[in-house]
Image (cartoon, rainbow, N blue to C red):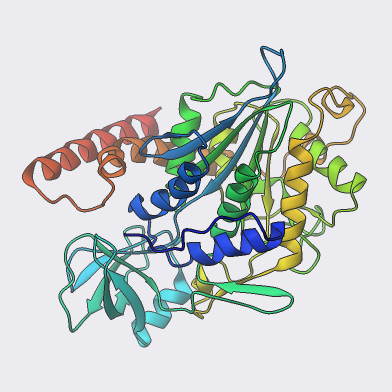
Length: 439
């Protein structure tokens, strides 16, 4: 079943192409651990344009190699994620809300005033609207449902907000996080840009639950990223500043954010030296008069696993500010996410300039060039090592516990063998988690 139009994007401007992809993406049913619809969307465009890719239970990966004789070109890894928060239903009475971080305000809202969710079965058929009458504000985030129709196991749903609209300045949608970056990155691939880098475009299938896809990619360094290579994650997040009296604050009006942190994590904090990803993006934006902000913000994203595993100091996230991320669920007032068109244009041009830059640019070798990340490392007031150790343990556990779930493409087991395997992996994951805590 296709949820989008089979269009050839050749006659529009870059922004129009991106918006067209993004608009169609809003029609795709989407929730953590149900990956077949978003994956099918990406593969449709890649197949139609004869672009090779590799797919795993965790990623879709496109490699763009330079057409020169350099046997070991500098690598750039671009990432965007395919999932968005939603409910996986066990039946028409209960389910699990995935992708939210213990949302006090939303739980209080639901427990006082039930909210509507749009419901699909596992095949993507629209079933109707059900009400969420209770949300447990804890790590399990179980929900209670009131529905006048049958909801089969592994059906799924999302907030009942308008899918897509736009005006002269803004785009409004239920899934800007991370749908807009998916559209930007996919359109960039379709443009087949020329480059001197060895570029990997990675669509992470599972980000909203502890970044399990990027952890899986980073834990064995499957793309063989070296210390001199570059990682650029693409996000659409809240940009609330951290310690604005000490570090540059970001806001929602003044352009995309060159993001150097997550909550409790300076990107590349385990590696000495400058952040060349930060320096390259900043230099290109300055040279091309692109309005970006340098931000120390406290949201979370796929840059954290690569920082925690110490692969390279050259890590940044480019974020389109999204005040109502997760459809406003964080503050309990459900409404569409909204972003500026000018930010979409800016990011698209910025990425094109990064790709067309020179791997022997002095920014990679300049010992005197400024790197805010390096300055912060001197007396790191950002990184909470206890929090990072805790998240590392969680990731190590979930990497085991979710292995079969990621592989089969749906959450709840549907036969005795799946149930047994889930139970065994869960027990093994907790044993490892306990051993890690003892250490």
